[in-house]
Amino acid sequence: MPAESHLSAASSDGPRHVALIMDGNGRWAEARGLPRAMGHREGVQALKRTVEAAPRLGIRCLTVFGFSTENWSRPAEEVSDLMGLVRSYVASDLKRLERAGVRVRVLGRRAGLPDDIIAIIDRAEATTAHNDKFLLQVAFNYGGRADIVDAARRHVDAVLAGRATGPLDEESLGLGLSTAGAPPVDVIVRTSGEHRLSNFLLWEAAYAELVYQDVLWPDYGAEGLADAVAQYRNRDRRFGGRAPLAEAAAPALAAG
Image (cartoon, rainbow, N blue to C red; front, side, top):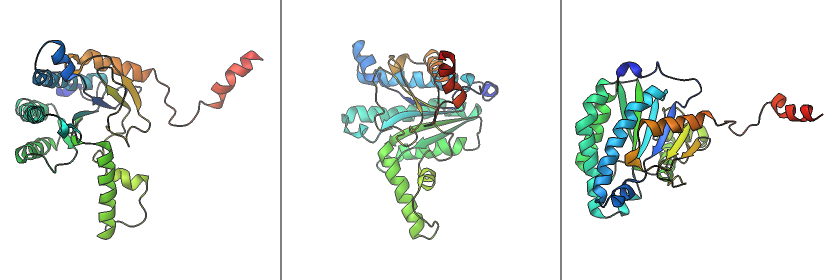
């Protein structure tokens, strides 16, 4: 990712923050008669292509769903392979991300992760903490419900410790989420043709646009991301409001 391409490509009508549910690795592999592990490995290459393409489309923050709190129920061999992909991705791409000005932030619970994975996450965040050209958030051992519960617990702990006062409200809960400080999520994209959020960014999805694309994640890249951005730009975002009165009255005036 060229460092100079970060903000110069930003578009006023494009999404600043895109969240991706990277779905379809297993089906991609099975359709080719390959083990599911190969689908996950190709999915890592798709992630690299997508992260590289994002700044050129005006995106400043990309949040990807890497491993959910529910994924622990998968076969032990597949869980182990997914953990291995974190090791290989950081080992192969961390230096490039650091040079390109990308800040890496890992969302989700550290508890329950292998010690070496926690060390890898800490190293990735520390190495890129000074970067501000692009924010890459990886949701790992993450669940939207769990994140809301954790945010509420942080508020309670802060009140009990005397660091906060007053009742829990939307603002204080939002500050306790693992995504606190990131731009609001503009659009959530899910690949593979499935139409659900699967416990991803439930709080942040309140007014995000939803885009579902019928492409398996290992085949994803710049073209798929550009299509998602184009769909977003064609949406009418009202955030619970309504069209201006002049626009709403226009059809009636024309009919009269």
